[in-house]
Each structure stands twice: as structure tokens, then as C-alpha cells.
Image (cartoon, rainbow, N blue to C red; front, side, top):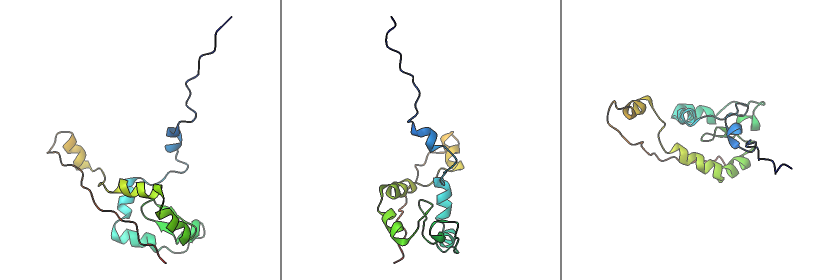
Amino acid sequence: MPGPYRRKKIHYGDPLKKRWRTKRRKKDLDEINDDLQAEKASQLLNQEVDPDKAGDAQFYCLHCARYFIDQHALDDHFKTKVHKRRLKALELEPYTIEESERAAGHGSFQPAKKRKIETQTPLN
């Protein structure tokens, strides 16, 4: 009589597959860093009314690249752990080609610079 069956090593609950799906792909940190430049940021915060986007594209979080349905939802989002983690991730300057060349031995190592990122001021 055979013994118990061996457990199958299939990871259905592994979040890695879900993280890399392109269906609901979010912007990367370097794309958000480009959006934080002054002229692009003002353009994103003062968008025209678009009925296809949540909240008619009037309530946008620059750091998370997300639209919200109203000001209350945006203010609540500023207090969440997801937003605070994104702010912390944006503190380091994004990886550049020059930095990769220094890592390969072409130049001297310089640690990544930290910068102060603050939450955008909510409109009341």
C-alpha cells in the first residue's frame, strides 16, 4: 500500500506573477521622477476634465500616479501606508547610466543622493 502523496510545489499564491502582469501595470519610479518636474507636475495636477478617468481626472496623486473619485478619497490616500512607502521609495534619485558605468569600474563610486519628498498640498 503506497504512502501519502508528495506535496506539489506549485505556488498559486505567489504574488510575483500578479506583480508583473501588464493588465494593471503602474508607472515605475523613474517615470514618476520625470513627472515630478515642475512643468510636467503642474500639467498633471491641472488636467482638463476627462470623463473616462476616475473623478474626471481632477484628483490625481503625483507620487503614486493614481486618479481618485473625489478630494476626500485623495486626502484619505495621503494618509495610507501605500502612499508613504512610495514617498520613501522616491527619496533616492533614480538609477542612471552614469551610475551603472561607475559600478562597472568606469569611474569612482558615489552613493545615491537622498532628497526630501513631501506630499503634494491637498486642495481644500
